[in-house]
Image 1 (spheres, rainbow, N blue to C red):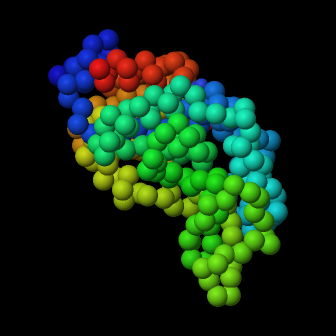
Image 2: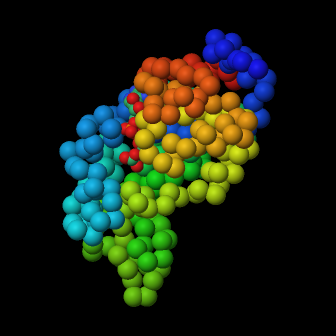
Length: 247
Ligand code: APR
């Protein structure tokens, strides 16, 4: 059956059983956190290879600690708050409960601050630090550097930012893949579709029968895999889409 975008939302309102949402940097852009690819491969003026790879960390750990300490501090700024798109997703989550899964590539805590719990942070979290040996994580809102050590190992080991860098395996992958295979709608919000495995989630969901929706400022690299598209600011189109489709 061909479903046209104009009428799709009402049709889907009757069909949704399991909803999976994937978010990327675009959902947090209006909350004051810069996206990645809008700045010519630089992340807050740093080359990605320097601050988002294991090799960069081995080369200059202090630079990497400083970089994530600054990003973590930014989350505490009164200027950085959840926007209407984050809040809309928290409302959907409260209606669908365990039938809703939120996956984010973002390392900020704006989904949680909007009211979402159980967010699958596949690329890690700024407010967590990880033991380099055991992989165990602790919550931290303050700075970490090479002088901070874990309490899980003897002798204690260094802590690193709990951020999944390029070349590393994203977190929660088996949970994510199970959710993608079981959902009947997959909604991708604010992601350029350039980084795998997240960029491939739409195909997995689609191949298992899900309706697929892209909500972004502009067409993403994977736009042809989506059955429905809405382009504009996340703070506008995300509440609009869910209000219309979940009445
Ligand atoms: N509303 C909606 N979409 C927006 C907005 C906005 N206000 N502002 C920007 N966008 C869109 C951009 O058009 C772009 O397509 O959000 C997307 C952001 O893309 P990226 O910067 O590539 O971010 P993302 O897709 O999340 O990056 C994936 O790459 O660098 C790694 O690990 C990092 O998690 C990150 C991953």
